Amino acid sequence: VIDWTVVRGIGNGLAMMPIMTAGLSSLPEATVGYGSALITLAMRVSSALGVAGMGALVTRTHAPLVADHRRVWLHSLTGGYSTGFLLIALLTVASVFLALLIRKPPPRRMATAPVFASHWRMPGTRP
Image (spheres, one colour):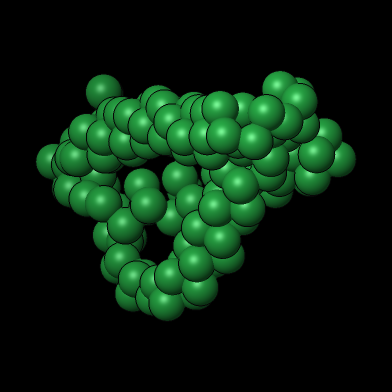
């Protein structure tokens, strides 16, 4: 379990920066700050919901095994976490397929010079 958690953690770490960069680069410059805040909020809320959901799934899987079959507590808890991690793995695979459907936005045209350049001149120079 620890080995796969480390692999998943490395994958998440390597994936987050390109995802954030792609998401923020598709926004207009005036709204990049709001976009960054919204992405951060979505990450925090989804993390909290994921941890709560994982806890609920483990508890739901763990409790009947202990009550009905009188299994060893640790064995049933391991079964609950195995079910939870399997569900997370399936959701991750589904997310990869959905991510492959995302299209790259068309490149934005950049101005060759700043807008204010025609109105600005060096002090002490003539127009």
